[in-house]
Length: 180
View (tube, helix red, strand yellow):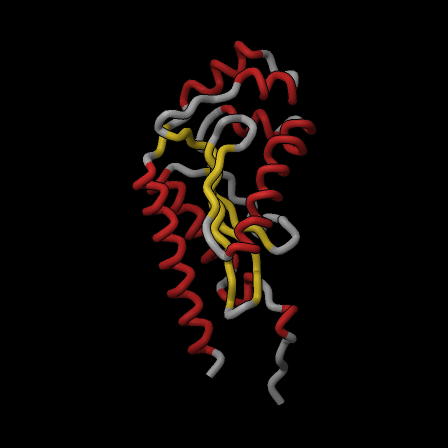
């Protein structure tokens, strides 16, 4: 007898193995320069792939307040919005850097999100003041670390969303075929 999972027990790794998720993260990093990640429904990364977009983000994340009050807050809010709307969400975090979150659904079941962060909008700038107030990192150090932050166009953001959706559709099709 074939063992089946309840609809509320499906995992991202049911759609594709971790190695395939890493390939997609790397494709986003290579093509769009995102620090890309895949998160499950609890907001936990399913890979440990590090692909930083700039020198500032790893320093922010290395501080407890930076991780908790900049990165985690942006991720939680945007993931919830993506889950509710079933649409991609693109916004700035409190550091002034863009974050892209695309929800992952199989049929009507929410499995998590994939996206990236660490780039500037074309007219954006790093919010040195906010980063300093939250993390207590010196503003001069923030300025130095953010010098390599790249910009991304609205068109490239849409291309990234399209690429993610395309890869998800391909893998969901493959998953559905395997279940027949």
